[in-house]
Structures are given as C-alpha cells and as structure tokens.
Image (cartoon, rainbow, N blue to C red; front, side, top):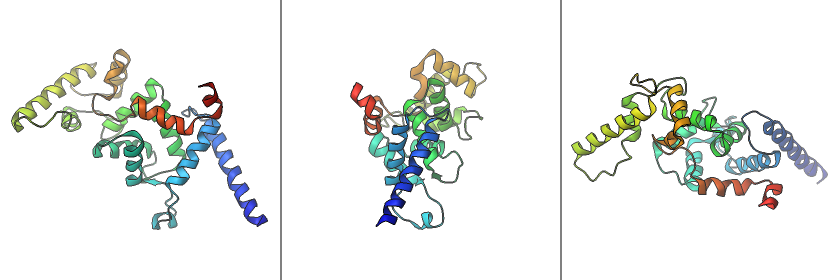
Length: 223
C-alpha cells in the first residue's frame, strides 16, 4: 500500500511540474491550475490502452480528436476537423501529445488575434502557414458553404462568385493568391473575415463552456 501511495504521489508531482513548465511557455495563456486540468482531461481522453500506446504512440489520435471537436465544440465538417487536427499535431506524427494539446488549446481558446489568424491560415493552407492559398483551394474550402438546392451549374457559379468576393477581401497585394501576410492585414482591418473560409475556431458558447470546465478556482470565485 505505501508503495502505491508513493507512485500516485510521484505521478501527481510530475503532472504539477509539467503544468508549471507549460504554463510559462510563450504561447500558453493558461494558469498552472488550468494546465493541470487540461492534462487531466488529456489523460482521460487517452486512458484506453491500445496497440499504438503499447508501441509508444501515446496521445490523442485523429478520430478521438474529431470526437472531442464534435462533442465539445459543435464542429461537424470532416475536412476542417482533420485540418484542425493537423494544426494541433505540430510534429506531424499522427498523434497529439500532452504538450501539443495544451499549447494547441491555448491558441484555440485564448489566442491573440495574430496567433488565431496564423492558426486559421495554417488550417486553410494545404502546405501550412508558409505557403499560399490559391483560388482552387478556396473553391474546395467554400464549396459546402452554399445550400445545394440550386441546379448544379448554378451552385458552381455561385461558389466561384463567393471565391472571387472572398479573395478580393483577403488578397491585399492583389496577386491572385492569399499569403499569410495578406491574411494578417485583412484580419486587422476586418476581424470577421478570420473564418471566412470555414469555421475552425470555437464559437463563444462552446469556448466559454469548455473554459468553465478547466477554470482556475480563483477565476471562478471572481465570476
């Protein structure tokens, strides 16, 4: 029995130490206690012992993360959910680690305007934030934004018009493609354009609900 208590205590200390380290990182906007609660959630989401875990692949895999996005953030678009997963999975190993989870959630829920616009651009761009978004990619992202009750050819024309309107708003240097610099400048002028290519951030209700789950006790008392 004493050995078990010692093991539990050691794990608790390790989590507290990790939470302290992560809460001091530049991209982290959570308190130490909030990070601890995020790490506890991470542990719950990954508690099932799978073959991948046995081979050292511990973390939140794609389908589990999509379930989190759907259940907690009302996201339903499969393509965008996969792209959000890739934005969280910084090392591109197919799993979201505990550190990627905390830093990803920090930007996702509490990021600055620049951090969230960079995140969104990375979700939209096929090759990440250092590439460009072209008309063809915008067409693919926007094709499900219109209700498909028109004739197919009419719907396609409307989609093309929507792409041109969106590109005109975002393409600040007028070169026919969207760069991260274009995107930042456009968002600073009109923040509502941030998710113009599809929802990839939580709405206010879902964001506040999730933040309530992990809220620091001091902040709860203030509320």
